[in-house]
Length: 311
Image (cartoon, rainbow, N blue to C red; front, top):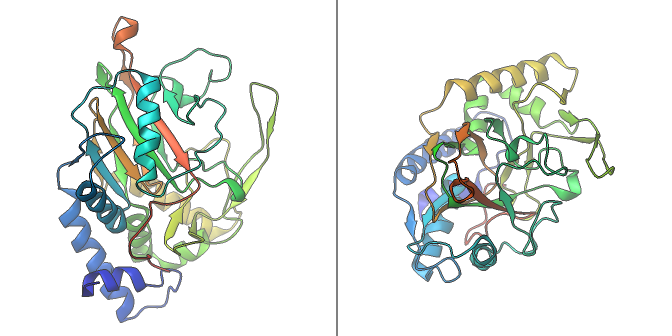
């Protein structure tokens, strides 16, 4: 472990007192993120067998900025075959046991495409409408939190469908720069609540209450649970919490030099530790063969790290 890695991986992010450790982590985090974010996607030999060097590079990128882009040379034979291969890819990163999602296929992979199915109707991921800033599964109970996922483009939209990506540790860094009390407020166990919701099949999704910033139970690394939506969400009735939520929403809308915008092409994807992301609206082609399809598989674990992260 070199000095920069040691700084990143020994920083106690939950300690909000000023000092040299915070200053060193802040400088190192920005410097290493800048060096990693502009690298091209990692070229994999194949989804199921990506190659040891490619896996190591992607793990490093995830340890620095919590996501890594990749691309494979072969075109997917079918959604089913690509989904199965995607599960094979996930295992190289310690991601096993996919989320039991109601819309998942036989391998635990969800095919995100426009749909009028009863179980998907009204849910924005299955429409062409834009998605606001969020982390996945922000509505889940604490025992079912999404901590990592893979997005893989099977077929690109005719127009649009870009994603913006932001490392949650950078959002934390900017928020702490603005006001450490904002971070403290968003660490409160009742900072953000998502009301209960009746699913199309009649089942009830219970209310979800929890912090915005919390530690991964294995590595201690900062994880984030967030949505920028203003409906069906309740912030803790506290002046600092409400101010922090407003600041964070404005910040994400304004942009950050360390945000990245990508429009995934067929065969490209993202392995990540549930980073902040959004999606622009898009247009499909006229035929069934021209409909945008992005595959998503989610896990209750982060990408396996050679070095354990900030505690």
